Image (cartoon, rainbow, N blue to C red; front, side, top):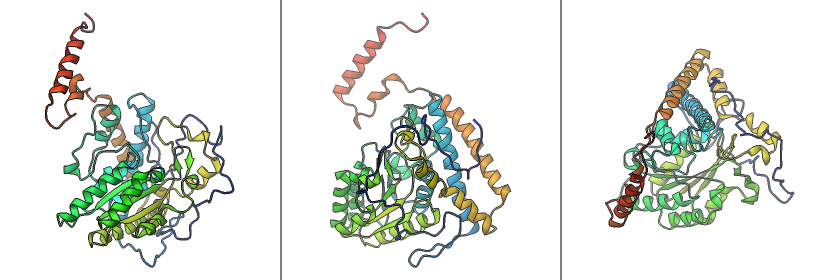
Length: 390
């Protein structure tokens, strides 16, 4: 697979070209939300540093460079996984292309003891929690049901059921508060999941019980083919006010702002202030999943406009402008990404298949008579067939 510069914006539109096919038309009654004046931003799309009266950030040179490296490597991994799915090596892939700043910024704000409840696109947060990319691939290849221990990584298993993880997070956070623990909980969800009743219920429980949970909504503008303007008449972060806790909207393509706002939100919930909602205003540059073709519903001019706000490109510009990195540094990161991608590809292709009866192993925590009966029946069924090649 040809290597690409990590700072290069990518348009993984699937099989359909942008601007082709049928698209969802936004009527005049649908309020656009993409030019909000209340957006917390520390880094402009051109890579210029700006001040904010409530949220600021002062990092070392190595930390700024580390944020760029994180985003660049996560994008390279994401692109390689997309290619592996197209080659038939993965059953599906859920790209996070364009959302790297929201995930790395928030992920690097976490303390080691904080617990994360992700949805299914938080590959960048998984990276921050030390989960190997190959472990993620195993789940999408079908060789595991998760592959990592949430107790060890403090990163829960991916949740496909929309919004369910917000309730799980609140229940866990309520337990944290009762135990007198000073750790925090973060629940990730998307703008589409925000329309689920589970999320509203989670908001209410968290507020009533002062649960130390940060709700982190990655508003990537599209719930598959449904635009956010047809899901919410007002910005999502404003919902927090109705439940009695703070909400902030941050530029989700600004890794510095996402880091600063998430740090502040975590301080708030740890201090006993109750829950906090962050809406990261970002964009899904690729398809919803590898089975989606966004060219059928998404205007090409919208994609072009967001491409100019690319989170990695702006961080690169900032590092160059401030003299914190040179072309040699970026080339080194690209080379590291290419090595990781090659290792990842080899690891996926050579990944051993699990035993056929492994599907019965973790239905219950302990062995169950009914499951053991089904295991025995299935083994007997397989024994009826001759071995391949005989």
